[in-house]
Amino acid sequence: MQTMPETFLIVMPAYNEEVYIEETINSWSRLLNDFPGSEILVINDGSTDGTKDKLDGLSQKFSYLSVIHKDNEGHGKTILHGYHKATNSHHKWVFQTDSDGHFDPKDFYKLWEKRGSSPFVLGHRQKRKDSLDRLIISRIISIWISILFGKHIKDPNIPFRLMKKAYLKKILKKVPEGIFAPNIFLSILASKDGHNLHHIPVSHKAKKKGKQNRLKFLKGALQGFVELTLFCLNLS
Image (cartoon, rainbow, N blue to C red; front, side, top):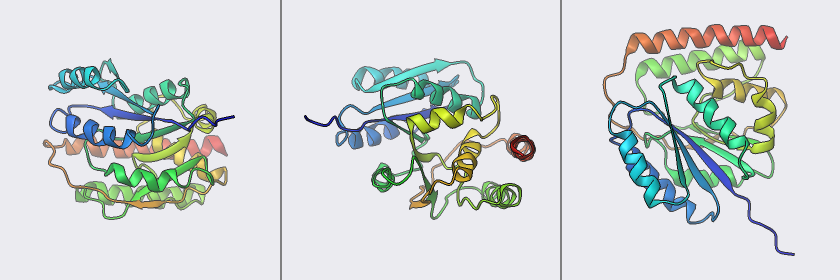
């Protein structure tokens, strides 16, 4: 009897990515040629630029691209929305990445090769092309996770992760709704379950972005620290 090929669903949140969304979808579409039956799901988080129109045009072009348009709720809720949709799909695997084109789809193969040894495989940005603020906060978060949970996770919030659908569905139940960075919580849960996250080095490209709201980012970071601390207490 012929074995059915394993397929995956790419979960991709988007907010005001008019400049990069077409390039990003095209690059991942080329990869999907090697994985017949796999699909892309983009969740548009109430973009105020031309992202919606571009996504609607792309969904007409690519049969394996589905788009959900919703009101703006923030990055965390958008990712969770995508994960819940993914766990109700027919695919065996869920892959999450962002829509801003920071990553090279070719690095996906590195994670795919490790799927037999772990249901939760992470990349880590070998040379991260982000602002100094983000680099410092990310480093502090990794240290805080080590202190709270006794786990060293190189890049706990990386939007470049491959997860077995059945396992993702299980640990999603432990992630509080409305949190700032659900990917961090998922990484912690997988690590605490004893899975080898692999921490595979992947490339990270610099992209020109609009002016970032620094105060909003710092507030979000503070919220993340508080949520992590409460999460640790609840698990205890």
